Length: 374
Ligand SMILES: Cc1cc2nc3c(=O)[nH]c(=O)nc-3n(C[C@H](O)[C@H](O)[C@H](O)COP(=O)(O)OP(=O)(O)OC[C@H]3O[C@@H](n4cnc5c(N)ncnc54)[C@H](O)[C@@H]3O)c2cc1C
Image (cartoon, rainbow, N blue to C red; front, side, top):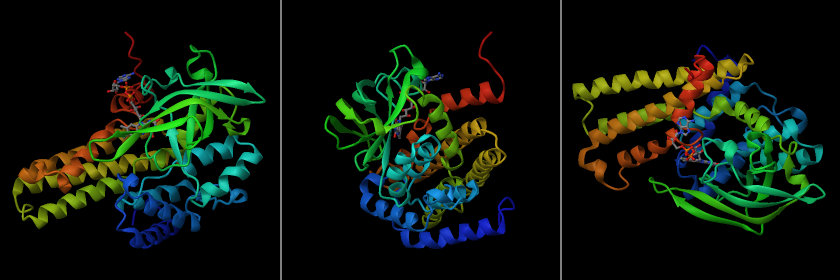
């Protein structure tokens, strides 16, 4: 038992593990796109248990549990490799709870809670990723509070299967940077929305999305016009404790250890020494993740802890995969061999959700107080 969690929380973890026994076939952490029907059933099963709304207030159908429950849920789901935490119950629902009108809460929260409404994140553009404040996708007011949206987005995860785009658009002047951005919800099958696949090295896909004079009704704007920057920061902060579950890293290490054992390679002293080092690395990853949870439980933003956690998590995933790739010899060169897939899947983790350079910059500036100026 982890001394940081109460007996009740540990019971919840055990309950999640037992529930996951029926979903062990899923293995969709990276390939939700290939298994969407089953992943959707999985999310609905979570919804039936109230686990997509664990921390929401009771009046909106939530269980009002402490955030440790979300951590435990997604840590176990990560370990089972069943799926990544979906955008709807987190960023979208928590933003609507905080900034939405009553009508928006009634419209969106029940469908998100039950696992029936799914969202893709429409932030990045071809010329705006790390520097999101430079985005150009334009929303022109059409009167009555509505907008007409034109622009281009790219790298949208899972958009090919989702229902809605959680879309960041420019409503202010072109040079307004973060002060001229607004969040709207767009149907992914609306007129004027076109999706194209962007294949990834591991055989999955991201998407590029064109928006050509897409009509967006007034009630689809969430929060104030030009007020998205603050809202996005808060939404990100709400999700820090579940973005990089250590369970996923432990699972990678366990899989590689079993793979070595099956090939009789785990008797080699150099292999054993590397495995021991990787086990220590995996523990460090868990400590980082728990520091994020601890900061948030104590009411601190946890941004520095989360940046350090992302760096540790993604680099250790790559280290484990790289070691297996090297031990694999010719097997590593075979397309679709487990070691090759693990390696390819680990590569983009240091980019999505903010690159390692940006994370290091957060640690340097906010954690260490370094300004970068001479
Ligand atoms: C697997 C995956 C899934 C993704 N899913 C989504 C999604 O669902 N929705 C979405 O909107 N986006 C998504 N993204 C996009 C992701 O957020 C961006 O790729 C990321 O923010 C980097 O932006 P960029 O690709 O434009 O690179 P750039 O910002 O152009 O960066 C290029 C290089 O320059 C470095 N760099 C940039 N600025 C600085 C700086 N200030 N200091 C130091 N170095 C810097 C970067 O670290 C990087 O190495 C996804 C990306 C990946 C890989």
